[in-house]
Image: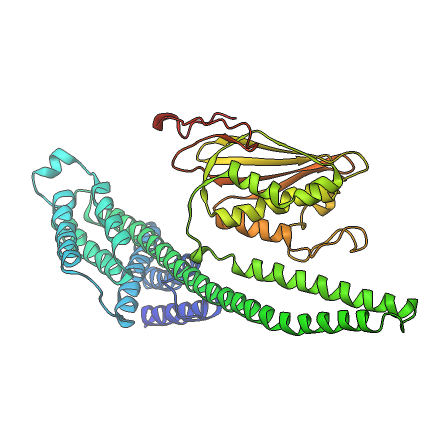
Length: 476
């Protein structure tokens, strides 16, 4: 009766602790829950073993000298039984589909045969035992193989099969200790450690797999959302340009037709309207350019950066001449990328370097270094510079540090550069000293042939590097 009461109290204690500290029903699918389950098992088994051993002592079935050994044997037997049988029962209660190929079935059957075979070799009375000695760790590779390759149902089945086979062989040949009881105690410790280890490993792999699937699902949802947003921006921008163009045409018509009838205030209002419409039109065009930059629609090829810089400088000739700017460059390489998008990057960065200048003559220098499989470019200027607290967010869309009256713009140029560089597999950053100038750095993957061509069309230097030095970490 006392033993029955102790066993009942143990079950009630276990249920209470499980519901209060785990309670989500997924005991063996999370690492934290398995650790809690192991601790709860160690605690709840104290009830039954304590009540049972104390009852045997009080009724004079065991002596006081044997009380500690009886209690420990009882407690360890309950712990090992729960750690082995509970996962096995719960693992096969919540069954799922078997998605195993015939090769995996052969692999599984072979591993399940190997467990009792190695148990017989290590724990049995075969002659190999005398050669191997008590090398119980020889079973660990097989069990780890099962935990890494199969789900938790197979893992708990392997632990149950291991327990059954080693107990049988130990009972037949108690070689782990001096007596059968000592051998079984050592065996139960081994089984408990292996059961917890394999459950933790299996749960960790299952959690990782769930996280990877969740990340993959979220990435797909994010990609769909980005595509929908880009399409919306593209369509909305097209729809916005038409009424803006109409407003611009009619405002210019009013300015020409009624110029004589409008006073200075009226002329100023019309000028503000035309200027606002044009700025809005530039903003829409920049938004269109930003929405068109999509990696899946981009076909990369070898791009001659020297030619790209020549084209960018030619496109900015008016601004360069008006400001008297001097643009120079180091020998520039061939990279792997999209030529039109890289032209936008160089054109935006050079244009900013010319626009944000001080009273002295703007000087812009384009440098390049070869670092591993990437080229790192540097566009350096002697302009107004950027305050340290502003360098963190200048690459965000619509972020501007100056008013339209000081420096006109839409605030999309650097965001567009960042998006293009990141889709090329590189990164972009800025190092600046306020009042002294800025240097914009960005990296691009090296092309199949590293050819250096000076950006000045009058001086062309072609240096084709041999294959074995193509990715050397030298600088130009």
